[in-house]
Image 1 (cartoon, rainbow, N blue to C red):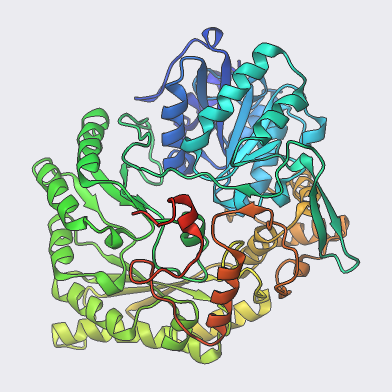
Image 2 (image 1 turned 30 degrees about the vertical axis):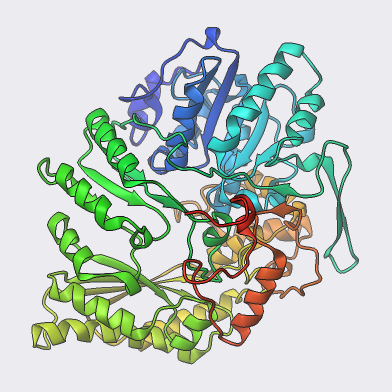
Length: 609
């Protein structure tokens, strides 16, 4: 057990490391058969905001035979203390070393956290390569696991899909394997037979002379040719915690999170989440209202946020918000409705939002011109944006945030300048309402991220803009914004470049990640530690050309590193959508017309909602 009490006064936010929060689970480790560490490869403040952790922490701890504890990446001050005093990375509930657990499960939310995974294993004294490991098993899941290959030499097995659907099956197999005292490889073979589990060491990858993949072939009889994701079919019947941990310190999202549905029917061609979480499945208002009531009583939180990819697409939003407002208004509990779409932002919805907050609204046009919005299948018009902005300003809102992407396929300078024009149009809506040209109280924020092609999307074959091109477009957009009330935020192009490397990378990158950690790379999404020059040194030393994974377009007949991972959406559908994008032809959303993507295979022939 790591005794850190004497060092807490030397670190920022000691509450990150003490545990013992309201709602945390306490068990006797001696009275359980399995010890599972839920590992989040970022600091406590970020990890404790993650809904998936709350769900799996509660679900696993309902098992009498298993104790799930939490492990987070320590900030630099605590890491220094651990290393200087030869203390191992520890779990919050017991303070025991991560190395003492049976399974360490990492969630993969962002490619730029990969060095933190290696750093956490190193801090715990766990061998970094799967082939060198004994005792503890290291697994991973989450959205980035749909291309698991960059971590293939590091992770023992991946869980593909929604964790609450499969985790108990994995733990049942582990419990039986442990009782049998069987060889380590036997456990991996047993779980490889489960739908949704991928064991990378059971596959051999060969390469062509040009560096592309020649084949991915199983080398063990337990390994499947294709590994299909697992999903929860009925969200009302799925586990959802009625009690959650309440931190003693501020975290990024310090509130109750009500997940109203999963999936998205819109079909934006850049959006990986819209593909990998298909099909759409909704939770009933009755279930949500009961959950809200329990969570309010059990936590004391003063805000509820509705969680989904597009909150205003929830088909029973009116019924749900009416019921929630009856509970939240008398108790002065704020109700947040993030992820709104401009094409279904209504007067009714705005009136309800006015009753709970009036700080600002966020919309995501994504592109500055109609042509490019058609390319990405955004299916919103300038008139949709204008009418929503006018409605919002008329209702008393004075701030609007607009999200865009730079570097989308087929983007021209005209499209970039179109972002500035669109922001000006939104600002003009405010002046029309106020009937004056003064911008008192007006705030229009333009945030532009850099497009990164993602696996399992129609744009997975596209080239990514180089750093130089992205920086030129950022400057063009910045220079094109003239109005003082419009603020421009942008994402660092080199970070997006690295994200692109690991987003579409193969298992040859495992050595790069390990080498980068040894060179000091960690918290790569934080400016405090990020060093692009250090990464370039690592690529050079490992003999890896990063442009091979980013600025290079792929042909349809190239074998992609993730082709043996089945998310339920067919390759043919993705190719059709890519071709339609080149012609700026849109596809109707799923609720209007089935596009034959293949996700109906999860619902017995029809997509269920």
